[in-house]
Amino acid sequence: MRLKSVLAALGIACALVIGIDYVSFAATGHGLLLGAVNKETKVTTIKRTNAGPAASFVTKTGQPPFAVSSTGKVANLNADKLDGRESTSFATNQVTSVYRFTAATAATGHTFTVPVTLPAGRYLATYSVNATTTAVATAANPITFVCSFDQYPTTLHLHASGASNAVQVAGQLIGISATAVIDTVNGNKLDVGCNAAGGTSANWKTPPASSAFAGSDAMPAEITLTKLNSTTITSVTSN
Image 1 (cartoon, rainbow, N blue to C red):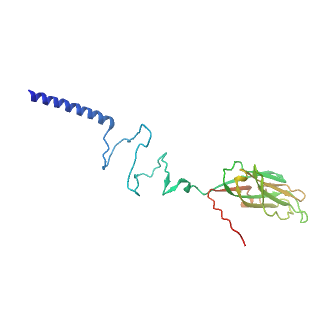
Image 2: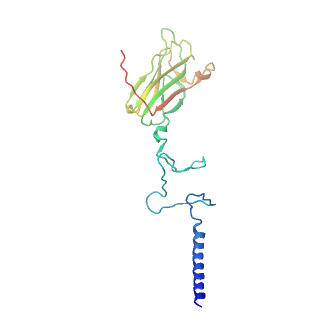
């Protein structure tokens, strides 16, 4: 009789254990097996309920902490270093912006303003202006054409070198270009102002109106800015 009671009690205990384990299994799935391949049909989430990382991977020095088999991008995965380099080491050293302008109404002067405030830094700046003059000039009274960079709020004038040749035919092409290094410590707004003088009328417009000016000659005024994020300055004394 006592043996039957003991066996009955053991049976009840086993049923309870199996029942509890079944409930646990149904709620949480299989446990992770260390040193083995774990397969599951659903995603495994590790959630920490207080401050700190949810997982830590520790391995030998020089060995990767984990490996992946997919080339897909992982959203919000940030890395402090890549191959021992900070993220700034991989930034594009040169970022170039090009602005094109037209001046359809002939006038003696036009100003082309870059429509953005320049982020702090140094820039390699170039302008190129091709225009059509509406004037008639002579060798004794030629049309001169001068353009310059202007920086604001501190005004800094960087003039182009030289001027156009004597223009003796109305509709003749005028072209000028120049390059300078711009630093935003002198102002973070930039424009190019161009003025013509001489002849019977120094009015001009861009792009060139004549169909004879094809290809690059027909381009309007253009300002190109290349930001130099990483610039090495070497001072050299000439003899």
